[in-house]
Length: 427
Image: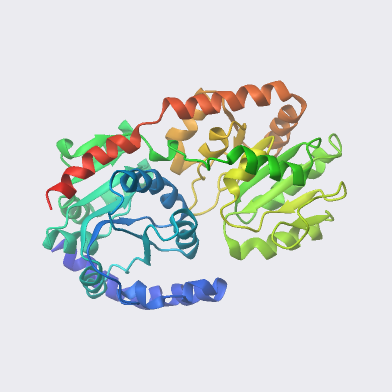
């Protein structure tokens, strides 16, 4: 009965879904690409995949990356299809895996779309990254004897409370999932309150700690630093959202009075914001450089660079003196911070805000390791950045602590694969 009411609600909300999609297309025309895939159709592909991995957007693709890489290393002939909901997620899949996996947009959770999609791809196992609960996808996989696993689960108190409001539906859906791999004990406990059997839940830690950098990382970061200038201090602000760039530019203007050769590199989270951020920089009177257009060899007059490229952020962090991670500096609806582990992995001190609801455990571990600073407001941001810019020894010490923390928390990929492989071997 709960699934019937859910499906009915989906059909009632269809006009709103179409309107939302149209608005997204107007804002970002790449949403128009391969539109049929969102309804289960699209270009025909050869069926039968060992794994179907659903990763909503960039963050979930990053979380899935160690799993995919390890699986393909162990089984080179395996076929994997990765679905995302966003064009940026699709681009991340292509940039990371090239032709070693297949990408499709996930179908909306309508029965007709899900059935058509499953007919096309015929997966042996479905892995849902983090906390993606799709009732019809899970139900139809279960009906076809396709095991479903949920991996790298993070379930905040707020999300758990929302799910409790529709507990009969959630309990029914989750009963069809074979195994759950959680990041923390708190995530495990919250799942149990939703009616999941304790024997199905396993704490594996977060796969996001297992960051695989390019083998030539040192050469790449050295080349970027040569473009910026070795003798000037550099702050890289990555994954920023609307409102955060203005805050950063105000803080940067104050810092310039004390560090006149300071360079700020801003990498907006979404490509459609590259142009608005560039305009914001010039409107505030800063000399601007755009990585995709202008000469990357910066002269002393350039004080702000907009990193309007994709796939470069880990290297940009690695070439920086200080990293600031966006999505956390101001309250933004639907955003609870972004992954702060990339700067830690490359040995750069990380600064992030108080809005880290999606990364509470990672934030806690980073602060406990003294690998980063969590700021409360704009004044605090200015104070922390000033402290780090003045003290290269502190920067080096925090960077080393970050790398050590990453090393201590590896192992989630192996633990997760140990849970998933039996599902595949049973097929």
